[in-house]
Length: 139
Image (cartoon, rainbow, N blue to C red; front, side):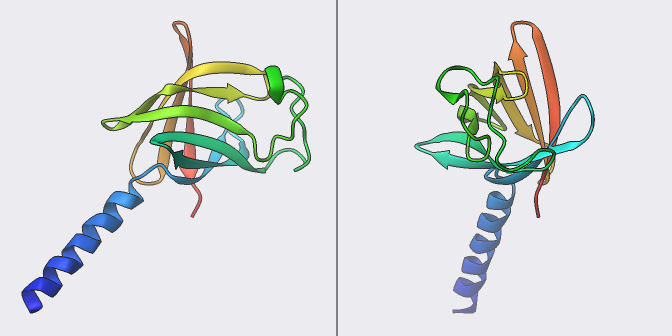
């Protein structure tokens, strides 16, 4: 009985540690050019792929619309907008999707990975050029 209880407790502990190291959750975005916090992005999983939508704007009014976004996103509110789309987990990295910079209206190939439990590194690519940002998990 005690042995079974210990095994169940150990299994729950391992499951909690695995979920803590997952990218799902809210992240404070930090602008790589200014070093200032810009928004809170919520990363979520849907159908085996990962997406990120703007949950809160930190440097603009919450009713800001996207003036430079491409296609159907132009003129839409930034809050609630998916800026990360179609990411797939491959080992310790997530890749194969896109990230959009609503300030510039550009869409980049993307990959991201965790560094520890509370730091997310994101890299957006356009050909051979790339930008890397560091986001912090919101506690």
